[in-house]
Length: 112
Image (cartoon, rainbow, N blue to C red):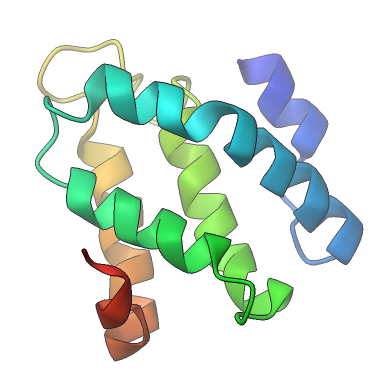
């Protein structure tokens, strides 16, 4: 997984890098949500971010911050590895919370 993240790079400022990240999310998002969705309290937030990200009306450059958060959630190797019991998703929660706060009311309609 770390290799996949390194290949994507952390720079989603170009449309090409964005498309690489988009492919990664489309291939891995639902597998991760199915595996950990019931263990985390912020699954609804992750799904709302994914819905926002999937909306064709949103320009790619607005989606790029969401892309970074979703990749961070999917990849298990990060600041606090997701394998650590109970605390493994705290850093993911922090990233997701920051993105939700940044998007504000723009994200409200994507909660189902």
